[in-house]
Length: 291
Ligand SMILES: Cc1cc2nc3c(=O)[nH]c(=O)nc-3n(C[C@H](O)[C@H](O)[C@H](O)COP(=O)(O)OP(=O)(O)OC[C@H]3O[C@@H](n4cnc5c(N)ncnc54)[C@H](O)[C@@H]3O)c2cc1C
Ligand code: SF4
Image (cartoon, rainbow, N blue to C red; front, top):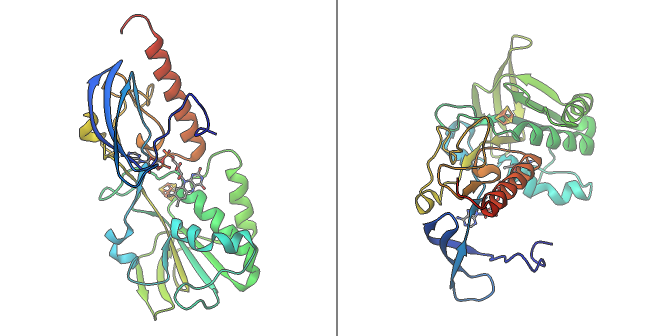
């Protein structure tokens, strides 16, 4: 693993305190509490820097219409994953969070905070995939005893095998509603009512749900913006030199972007992007002449 590799030094629980210098001569001061109780300051010399600090999860409480943080049965996709991972792994029924009661109706809502001028303009790239996977798992575990709905604008699941997941989810009986809710109202501590106009049938639907799952946006993590003097793009993520041809280099020579620090990505896209970043950095360092 990376930690065991003698050519790689890993500092866990580390915070970047200061960065100065330039390409082939960066000085990075970090504070680490990885191996001791007291924080230790470490000075590192670096020829290049790759920023792989990822994303922040969108705070769904910014959109009060979804009752996240106010109603016990409204979760994000990540909460769902964390709350139910053991149940899914061990094939045990899922439960209603508020009272551990039986789940009979679950509604997934896509694009929460994404593709929205007010919050994140871009697509989160993973919300559809996550909802398809979670909705399919619910149907596999509960069969006809549960109604599972996905409210969507578009389903964006174009990666390898993702169309197959979409087909399987439909065949499992998950109901797809083309439209996002116009109104959500708590009915009790255990249930909510969701009104949504379905554009494919032209009908206003009213659904009583035991659980609402919000597939939230990936928001930028720009904590290193000032320390590295990095510009941001219109989407709020670190800005690359060229959106079409070079999403790895930044305007600061020797500072590269990897993964979702540059914009929302799936895991495989992140790995591919990060591999390119490592290759680009190594190539630039090993070049004899400065560009
Ligand atoms: C609910 C949900 C479901 C998802 N489901 C899927 C899925 O099914 N399939 C899929 O392909 N993708 C999925 N994703 C996306 C996946 O999480 C990302 O593609 C992946 O995590 C991106 O990796 P990353 O390394 O860019 O960022 P991250 O995973 O965010 O890693 C960044 C790391 O940097 C660290 N860090 C941040 N700031 C600093 C700092 N200043 N100093 C030091 N360290 C720092 C963080 O602690 C973190 O460890 C999902 C995401 C969410 C939110
Ligand atoms: S991946 Fe799906 S849920 Fe996420 S913003 Fe794009 S369309 Fe919406």
